[in-house]
Image 1 (cartoon, one colour):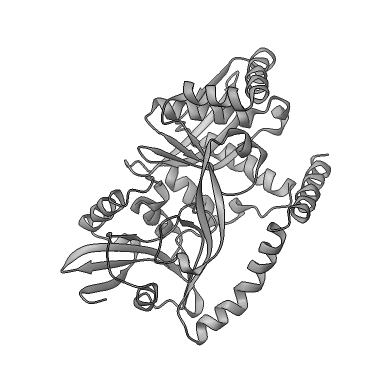
Image 2: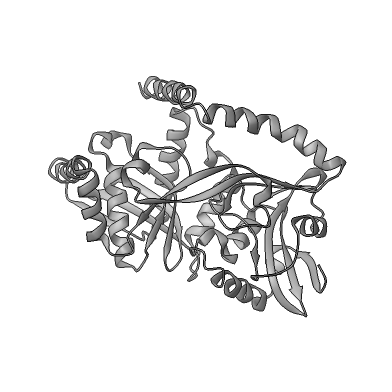
Length: 361
């Protein structure tokens, strides 16, 4: 690590020149401009997570890298915003000579956990336990080209979804779509729908955590070229029937929290919403909608290709690292065991779906 100096600061302690250097280094990586990797996301997390920090790497006095992270008990580290962040890693100058062990030592971390490590993060990828597909909608050649691809691949899906959109307009009132809705009331409605969906399906309600709710509200007001909050809403007769909140850069829309009003489920408003999001994104110059890792029928229907992300942990040898392995690895292995057996995973999904139907009644 000759010549590289590292100091750790709170996100809000970053100087303006450092955040600009962060953006410049990120642009030089050649990776998709994912907004989760921009300083604005880390700054927002820092406002709601007191253990958030950023390692600032300098070589010959110049910024050479940034490593956003959170530090927990016993030096157990985690990706910034772990649990909601869909793209993770360090922002480093190409060719910078440093090891994961050196970086973790400088941050006083015994381990660093990730669940959406960006492809190409060679510093941490040796610690990956599993790799997952993150489905993507490519609208780089325009929405019309995307529709043509859908029509060729799944003609029934596209025809049915567009027919439901027309039926929604006839039966519930004129359909309109707002790509970037600024009304806080619409965001509250989306969060209410999503919380209800989590509870119906037996999943952990993310919005029950104050820091996540506060983070989303904060990001809704964030406006920066590399990271802006975007709330998209599908209306029928001025009544919201589906909504999505995500983050965008100039070229990437990271899909994050979609939900819809169950009263309109028969119209598949979530699918209609995503088609209109793709159309508006393409018109805005956005070439990619990243749907995020995780199995879902709507993702399979809408995707055109995929990115790869990894889950695991980078561990610095020592007694605290051993404690980390003891506390974390059994759960990860159990989840991996289920995911690796489609029939068993299917039973789990079926049980959750049955529970959702029962709770719906």
